Length: 342
Ligand code: F6P
Image 1 (cartoon, helix red, strand yellow):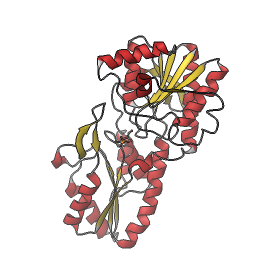
Image 2 (cartoon, helix red, strand yellow):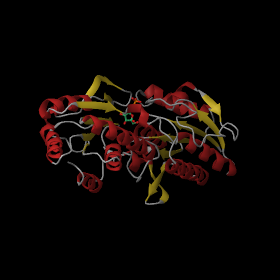
Image 3 (cartoon, rainbow, N blue to C red):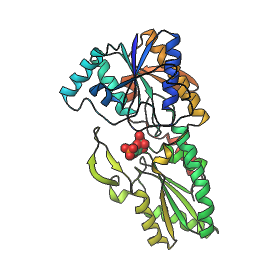
Image 4 (cartoon, rainbow, N blue to C red):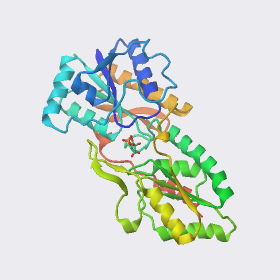
């Protein structure tokens, strides 16, 4: 069987570990592989590279993706969609293994509905993909946020300031909640719960009343004040999948908190630091388990499926179920984090 592998959407620590695992297990099952460059774009442009045991050697700890990635939506026009299907035939691919988040796997779902064999692997640092408990890359992002909060704590305390830390998370505040919990944030703001600026300020004041003259506030980039009625965006332009570029909540909040509490306030945007570099041990193992099972699904002819983590078991679910809706933050864990607000 000839199998094409691609990585699409924002990159994520562990992508290379998945590629390595799919190829290593796949070769044991007599599958042959090519790597498609830059996500769906490479299939539209017939840009690919061979994937052999040698070319995947040394990949386990490497961040980024050796295949490159892009946010290309081949279903934007019917012409592109047809070109995609005909290129898959031209390359004599029997199956595509797509490693991606909601957008990339949404394309894999549509392709499957058009008769192309696809298997998905759930990737996103945001952990907002349905039908799986965790996506690989999330643990690494949380570790990076935790380390940043530890460092910011010491300088914030020394200067008696308020620090607003903006982290990734468009529609779901998983990174903010887990990172904030692990890093001891005094307040965590997530897109699922629009916030009140005065309430945030009262947390800072309450802390001052009990002798704490510094505070750390973690805000997901998609968190927004009730009064604004919507997310704060960088510009009005949308990407190929219709997403706006978010960012600015940290700066907005820092200004307001300083104005309303009198505390000198700074903000830090952790941005792409959360996606760069080597994956944690947990993510290497999860990525490897996903990759091995994805190769087996191809071998077993179980197409239109995505590998997933349920509890501590690797299972497979339908791609359609996985890409239906955003997985927002578990209310229980946010409630737990809020025990430590103020
Ligand atoms: O892939 C998800 C994500 O990490 C979001 O949290 C964030 O909004 C976005 O990617 C940023 O992507 P880009 O690399 O296009 O700036």
